[in-house]
Image (cartoon, rainbow, N blue to C red):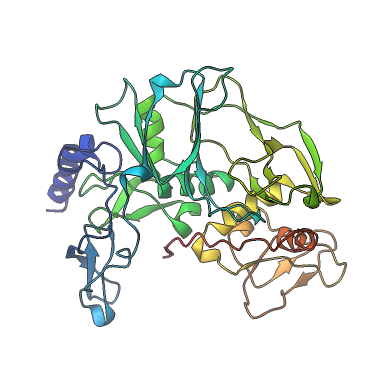
Length: 399
């Protein structure tokens, strides 16, 4: 019976493969799985919980719908998320932009003294010819990619796919295409699961647990890249240097760490470093809009690696409030957690300079060290106005 069940599940997955809800939209789903939340929840039983009770799942919003005492909830945990509007989804015809296309997962700047709204979603750059100015320089909640290699309706990529692609890439993990063996839905690993390779996954499409053939981290963008015929592209550290004074840019300054584009068609290599926007006045168009290898603001140097890591850490809900600037109590060396420690809160820190083991002060016992928050506080003291505090507000997903 067990072998028959496995064969039936595989046949079901094969049947649904060409209409994966988040990659290849079908006629029944013109939005390609990018559902809105104004519709009522559609709650069904989806298996057993660890305590033996029934687990419930909302098929419409693809989220847990188990209420207290193991009862079905009236609304699932994702019902509050704003629906996708037509203007939120950008149709990107790759054939129109032979000059180059680049798509990134967009998250809030780690430092932002503008009064512009928070950036979150998929940031799009597109040029008609290599020497032309950027015709597209916008952020959308979803992008539908169209070219001759893809189905007629194209492939839809959501903001969550792009954001978690950024996070997983920054922490050095490879991603793979993972497909639910029950319903054929393309799987995205979020939050904790986006930085911890594993085999057993919880399908957002049907709410059931399934096991993949390999240990890894799932992201539908891998399938998008394969379908578009895109491989990895070259990256190179930016050779640009910049020193700015904040009083010269009263409209504000924004800082991001660079992360590799998940789709890049330009022939030249992508630059790595710190991306800076600086505004002479309150407007949507920055005076400075470049990626720099060295950035100094009001005499304070910024480290590209620390900026990039803090940007990714800030996008992970399970790390909220746990990334702090910590000094060794013995030698006063600022600590910077690297490798797995950069996303694994710990109660004990070991100073790489003097080998002293110590616990970080504060209410939270387990923390992660990054010197950048304290550095940004120093920079903010010379800013014309208080920096914005953005909350990306992604839902936590933990074991």
